[in-house]
Amino acid sequence: MSPLRKSDVSRSEVITAPELLSDGYGVNSIYLSTVVSTTSSGVITVSLPSDDVSLIYSVDYQVDPGDIVWIYGTQPSGIADGYYTINQVLSDTSFTINEAIANSTDGYIQFRYVAGANLVGINPTGMETVQSNTVQKAIQELDVGKLSSFDHETLRQLIHFIDEGPADGFASGAYKVISPTPSVFPTSIVWYTDNTQTKKIVEKTIVWSGPVPSTITWKVYNTDGVTVAHTVSDSITYVSNIFEHTRTRTIS
Image (tube, rainbow, N blue to C red; front, side):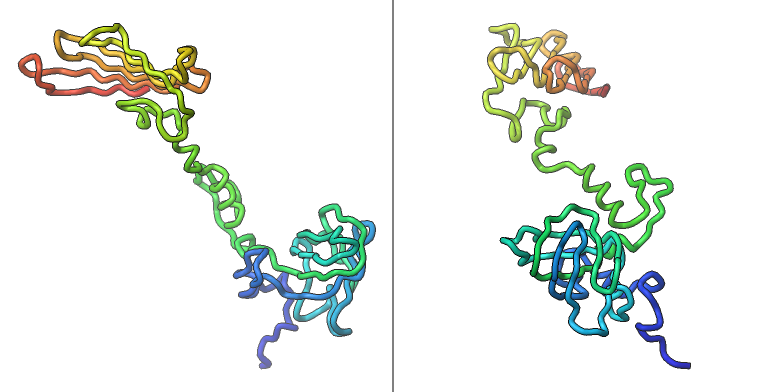
């Protein structure tokens, strides 16, 4: 039996190692480089290196819809330069793209495989965040939902505020008010966005039992400064009236 050769299969039947390794834009994704003849009315025409090379029939290339092309050096003044996605291969030397493109002459073109992760399937059944069925799209879904370092700093969650107010990620000028004042046993400590005291960031209220707090409640507010986003309340018991013994936390 003769060994299986590249000419015996098409890209639609067998996914090769270079396709799986492709990132869609790096040099490892390029499978054909040649010269652009013209771009006109959305049709790109290329000059191929030999009669043996064809965008449709070539054994080595087999250009497919969805492949990426990078065009550069077009005239005049790089007017059609950029990345494009192949829509339909029309002939041995021409194809259309999904995106709009300016009319031009000359230039160079690189044909590139799509990112290999587009070719690897997954089963999203039972997943809460991911709904896509390819690795590429699944990663994109996860990336969209991630928090940046700035987003994390500015989360309106009480873990960021107990026991003090805002820090990194919040604007300077936050204003703290303790009530009543003067008092050894304050019942309210509020951080506002500024000294106008119109928008609250976080609030701590205390119910005292003699010299010790029996209940401490923290509230963090949404960006409107009025609506409560989260509440944490601690109920505290003591031994000999001054030594904390238990603390029950309610989170809402």
